[in-house]
Amino acid sequence: MGHANWRESLWARRKDRINSSLWRQRRHIGSVQQPLLKSDGEWLTNFSSNDYLGLAAHPKLAEAMSEASHQWGVGCGASHMVCGHQSPHQQLEQALAEFVGAERVVLFSNGYMANLALGSAFAQRNDLCLHDKLNHASLIDGARLSNAQFKRYAHADLAHARKIIMRNEHERLLLASDGVFSMDGDIAPLIELNELANHHSALLFIDDAHGFGVLGPSGKGSLASVGLAPRDNIVMLGTLGKALGSFGAFIAADEYVIEHLIQCARSYVYTTALPSPVVAASSAALELLKCDHAVLNGHLDKLISLFTQACKLEGLSLLPSITAIQPVMIGDEALAERASEHLKNAGFLVPSIRTPTVPKGQARLRVTLTAAHTECQVKVVVKAIARALSAVGAGFECRA
Ligand SMILES: Cc1ncc(COP(=O)(O)O)c(C=O)c1O
Image 1 (cartoon, helix red, strand yellow):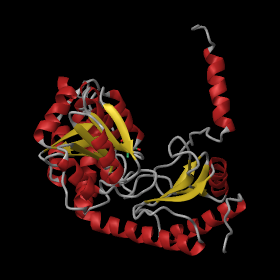
Image 2 (image 1 turned 180 degrees about the horizontal axis):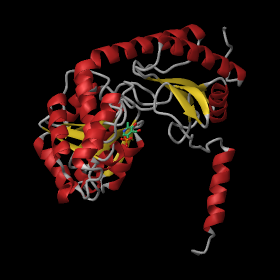
Image 3 (image 1 turned 90 degrees about the horizontal axis):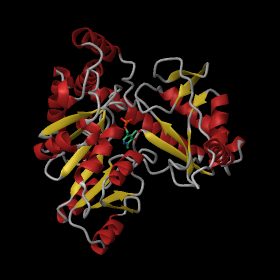
């Protein structure tokens, strides 16, 4: 016992992954984030980025970053609790709190670490963390870090959630859901979740990584899109590395929730603060949102309608998503990978998403649209997807 060979074991796991068409490879990107991307030396039209508003390469963000690096330096030197919490952090927290209508906001290094904090800092041994089955991996990892019970209800199925709550003995309840589901693109039943949370005096965590910056008035997020705000029992997570084109994340909630995180969240306390130039870029993105959201998002909405209508005409199978995340369902992992490869050869970057990111047998092409795409690029990629699915034998006859 205890003498098995690591190299052999890793080799066997690698072979398993390759044989199941689950081996992944990084692409080497040789250009800025934009619809035309240099990937492994080839120029491809990119439909894989979460840069929904096309801000990642925006000159105003770059300028803000550059100016802040001269004023504040590059590194923050220590964690927020020691001496890393500089004025740009303080200003962005206040601006975000005002923007999303929360009492207070705390910044995190990224969404993954914010979700680890959410799960682990609140729940205790006798509590129940109840999650949507399709929640993001980081939200799930957070719940698993706590000593609480962890259960999942079928996707968006509140009757199932209610049943689990009634059957389960627990002291406190934590309900958690993505606002916009990262691989399906649909929006959680937020009003009903809030009612359920209120009924059981639960904390409701909404991970709005894919809604913040896009949905709701001025891009305030999925909660704002249904008239809710991160107040009372509602806790919201927003990321700054997707629609805001920068990097980092925040949690917005009432004062007592935020102060608890600052005191107790290990992924906050034990890490170096975000570099101030990055924070300054996020502040610049927030200012752009306040001024230009209607224009940027108006164009994105138009592209989403164009894409879904064109897919319908081609007979492609989509999920019921009205957001910028538009999965084209295939099912089989190997076919999805071959379709993505076919698209790459035709000049498009459209990644295949396979298990374990999505349930086995639900492999898909995950198309993401951004405000930087043109109508023409969207029309052309739909035709290319139809041809790719037809060519790889994904049970689809191209109508073109
Ligand atoms: C729903 C969701 N939550 C959290 C995260 C993590 O955010 P970050 O990339 O800032 O770590 C992601 C990232 O992909 C996500 O899709």
